[in-house]
Image (cartoon, rainbow, N blue to C red; front, side, top):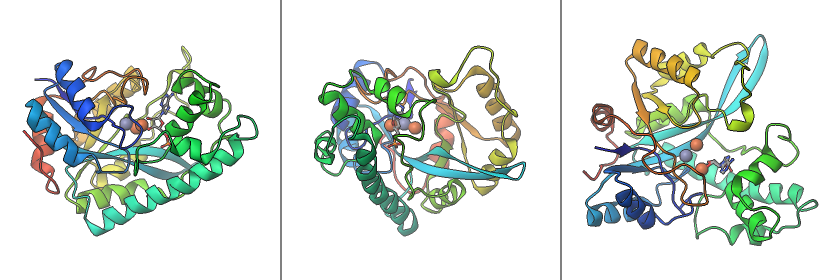
Length: 301
Ligand code: AMP
Ligand code: FE
Ligand code: FE
Ligand code: ZN
C-alpha cells in the first residue's frame, strides 16, 4: 500500500491539473494520495471525481503557509512554516477567513515583487498571472514560470537560486504579510476538524547545506513544544528536504509526545520540482490515526 500525503496541482503551484496528478499517481503505483494545494481546497471536488474513476484513495488536505515567531536570547525571530491540514472543513468561518486573507495578500505581494524584479528582468504582472489557472493560489513559482517564458531562465530552481537563494534573500523577496501565526493556524485547523502536521519540518534546500556545517544552536525544542501544546498532530519526517539529523530528532520528539509521523513526495508536476510521486510514503497505521482525528471533511477510500 503506497500512501503519499502531499501533492500540488494547477490550483496552486503544481504544473499538472488535479486529474493529471491522480492519473500520474496511478501510473506510478500510488494507492492513496492527498492533494494539498497551498492555502486552498479548490481542487478537492475534482480530486474526489478523479480518485473514484481511477479506483484510488484521496485524502483532502491544504498546505497552509504560516509564520512562526519566537524569541531567542532576547532577539525576535520569525520564519515561514508550512502546515499541512488534513480533513479540515474549509468552510469553517475562522479557518476560511484566515485562508482568504492570506490569498488576498499573496496577490498584493505579487504586484510588489514584480515591481522590484522588473528593473532587472523586464516582466509584467499580466505575464505572471498568465502562468496561472483562474483562481489559483498566487506565489513565487508563477513569477519563476513567467521569467522562464521570457527566456531568462530554464528551470524554476534556477530562478529560486538566483532571485531568492541563500545569498540574495532580501533583494527580490517580499514577505506575505497576511499569513496566520503558526500557533493560531494550528488552533484554527483543529477547530475546523482538521489534523495539523508540519510539512518538511526543519527542511533545508541543497543550497543551504554545506558538508559538515551543523545547525547553529541545535534544534528549537521550545518552539516545537509550544506547537504541540497548541494541538499539533505530527511531523512530515520523510521528505527529501529533511536531513537525516533532523529526521532522528523529530522521530525522538514524536515518540516522546506520541505524535503522528508521515512521509510524502511534495509533488509539483513535471517541471515544477524534481520530487516524484511516491518517493516517500506514509505507514498505513499513521494514516489511520489521521483519519481517526479528522472530522472536517471525508476521505475517499
Ligand atoms: P511562496 O509561497 O510564494 O513564497 O512560494 C513558495 C513555493 O515555491 C513553495 O511552495 C515551493 O513549492 C516553491 N519552491 C520553493 N523553492 C523552490 C525551488 N528551488 N524550485 C521550485 N520550486 C520551489
Ligand atoms: Fe509549492
Ligand atoms: Fe511546502
Ligand atoms: Zn508542498
